[in-house]
Image (tube, rainbow, N blue to C red; front, top):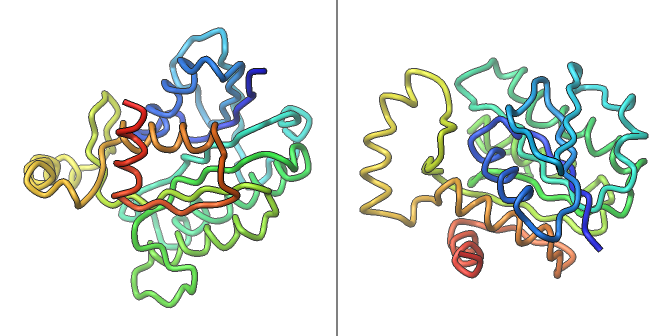
Length: 223
C-alpha cells in the first residue's frame, strides 16, 4: 500500500529536494504540499494547497486526513526577518501545523528539518538555537507516535534552488571551498533530503535526532 505524504517548504532549497524524491518514490502514492505559492511542479502525485495564513491551518483539517508522514521543511534564515518573525515562522507556524495534523491524522509520522545547535532549554545566547530548540519541544508535545528531527550544520546547495540574499551570494564560494576541505561541517541539500525521506518513510524507530554524521550515513545507504 502506498503512503500519503504531507510536506511544507516545497519551494525551498531542501524542501525542493524532498519533494523531488517523494514524487519519484514508489512507496508514495500522493504528496500534499501546503504553501503560500505553488512549487512550480506538475506531477500526477502532487496535490498543492495554497494557503495564506500559516498561523491558522484549521480550515485545512479535512484535507489533512489520512496523512501517513509529514515532512516539515518550512523555514527562514535568521538574518532575513526580525526576531519576532523568526520565532513566529520557526515555532508558531509549526505549532499551527501540528495542532491541525494531530486532529486530522493523529497516527502520522512527523519529520522536522531542524538545525545544528538547537537548544531545547532555550538558554543559548544564539536566537536561532533558542527558536529551533523551542520548535523541537513543541514537536515532542504534539503527541505523534513517531518523530524524527534532523539537525544539519552547513548545507551545501546542489540543485537550482538557493537561499536568497546578498550575504549568502557573497559567502557561498567561501563556504563551498571550506566544505570541500572539511566536509564534516555539514551536508549537501541532497544528502539531507535523502536521509529525511528514507527515515520518514521507513519509520523504524519511535524517535530519532540526526546530526551531520548520521545524515551522511543514511544518505549513503540510499544513494
